[in-house]
Length: 113
Image 1 (cartoon, rainbow, N blue to C red):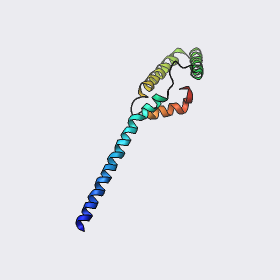
Image 2: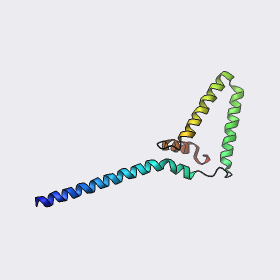
Image 3: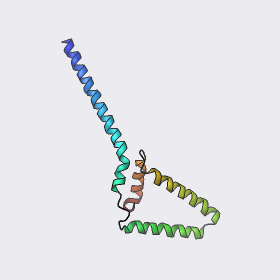
Image 4: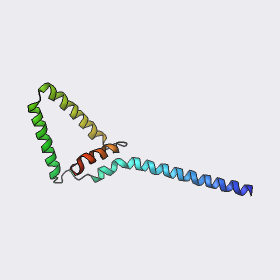
């Protein structure tokens, strides 16, 4: 009866180890594919997207107005910082581990992204 109990415990231990390994693999797959989810949701750039065009036009008018109203010594460093941050976000948002960035952008911009 002791041997049976030992065998039963070994079997349970093996099953638990298998389940843990399976859970770890699933977690890795989720991490790998989280950044791909948004890449698949994005529309073709050739798609006629009026909302995106209106958004870009709005930003263009906003920054053109700022350029006229703010002095040059304030505008240039501000735009340099904004452009650098925008480039960093665009380069990082499809990398593994930066899925939170896509979540934030979709929350703020919604369908215009």
